[in-house]
Length: 136
Image (cartoon, rainbow, N blue to C red):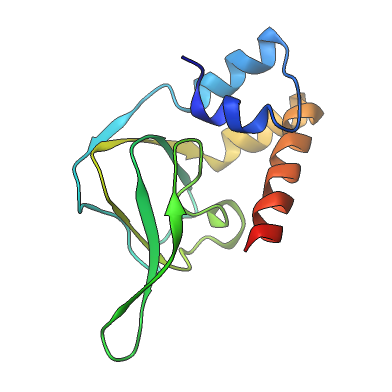
C-alpha cells in the first residue's frame, strides 16, 4: 500500500523514486494513539514541527465560550494535524482522535531542507495547501 502523504501529494506531482524515499523518511517513526486521545491542544507550541496522520481518523475542533465543542473538520491519513504549525508556531485549534491510529512528528527544518532539494515536493505541498484553503 502506498504511503498516505505520497498518495495525497501525487494528485499534484508525479514523484520520482528519490522524492518518494525522501517523503517516506518524514514519517519513518510512527507513534500509536487510541480513540478519543488528545493529539494537539489549542495554543500548543508547535515550533518544532507538525504531526502527520499516518493511520486512523481525527477531528479538529475549537472550544466555544460556553464550553461546547465546535468541530471544524476531519483529519484523514496523509493530512497534517495542524498544517499551519510550520509557520505559526502555535496550534490554532485542538485535535482529538476518533479511531486508533498513528502519527509522525515532522521536523520543520527537515521539511524545509527537503523543499530546498526538491522544488517538485515544495510545489506539491503548495498545491495541497491551496486546495485545502479553497475547500475551507
